[in-house]
Amino acid sequence: MPEATTYAFTTLGCRLNQAESDAMAEDLAGRGLRVASDGDTPDLVVVNTCTVTREATKASRMALRRAVKNNPGARVVAIGCYAESDPNEIAAIDGVDVVLGNDAKDSLADALGDRPPTGPLLQIGGLGPRDPGPVLAPRVRANLKVQTGCDEWCTFCIIPRTRGPLQTREEDRVVADAARKVEQGAREIVLTGVHLGKYGYDRGGDERDLIGLLQRLLAIDGLYRLRLSSVLSAHLTDDVVELIASEERICRYLHVPLQSGSDEILAAMNRPYRIDDYVERVERAKRSIPGVALATDIIVGFPGETDEHFAATMDVVRRLRFSKLHVFRYSARAQTAAAEMTDAVHPDIKKLRSKALIALGNEIRSAFLEAHLQRPLEILVEDEREIDGVSVCSGQTSDYVRVWFEGTGLLGKLVTVQGHEVRADGIRGGTLIDVGS
Image (cartoon, rainbow, N blue to C red; front, side, top):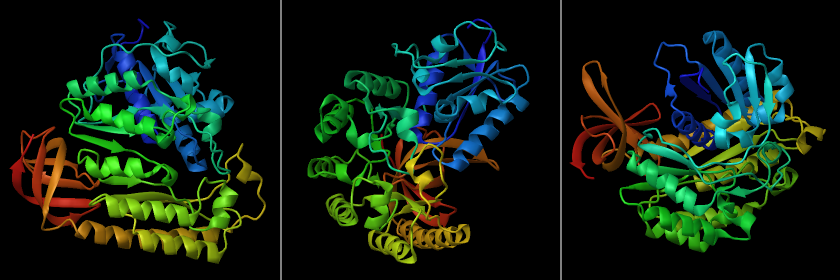
């Protein structure tokens, strides 16, 4: 790709998308390209799109149009789930030069070839993987793709169509990628995937495959933390929970999607669990893992959801006290089974239910944050910058709370800070108590 020397990425959607953007950036850097400086127009702009909801699709279209408008003369590439599901819609956006399917993420530079930066529109399907080239220095907290694809076919979700069936990345390669990120400065690795709990299932495995991967990653010298991005309740087996509980380097944070507190709605969604089992597994994890925080996703206003169904969801949230709620109002997504359902919930009712659930989530979140005050907090420092003449550091606790405090020269270190006051959606720290690794 000799004509292009600089690039920029815009990434929408999930942590898996972010991990893939990081890998694509490494691919480009391995071919001699560099990240465009602030204020400069890059030669190549890659928009990694999302289409999991109607709002995500809209945001992806806006990002593509903005990329074209703000980068005159640049080659604009659309890639990702929206490019996979609706390539013709993207092709109609004036100024988008290339549309790539998800499989092309494995070797972006090869997919683009040496065509000129403003060459004709291309639509490219799946391309095979290749060994990565030289890497960029990763963030202190780096996302790592270990799996993609899904076989659940939830009625509201298009991901099985855009991501395809379960696909596990080879364990040796995952470990090598993690080791390289650590060597370059990463201290926390976040494992990402569409269906993380089914790592290895496409090869006839089970949860022991994920446990084996975690154990190998924990053996990497210089890795301070491992974080799981999301896992279904069905995969919180005794063995998985026992490993997390026994290994303090695995973060005390579990994102366990719920979607609804009603078995009837879960059945309509084709979710692979029911409430009693979900609650039992999550409560067992809370009892077994000291200090674990729980986050979840919930959809309100799914077709057929009654006041009683919604009340059941509120009850589960009150019982389990999730540290963070991600609340979505249902909107029909084309190419999904739920889009054909006729018993739609009125938009005003969706809005009221969403507001009530968010208020409950904020109440629980506030209490969760307050519990971090006036006690030592171990922070992995991810950022350090000068604000009004003062050097301010920030980072995350193991249970995924952002903390800001004054300090310098601490990037990439584990430090202990006294929690001082709730600030925005995190904690302002006071005294720096200890500087560890």
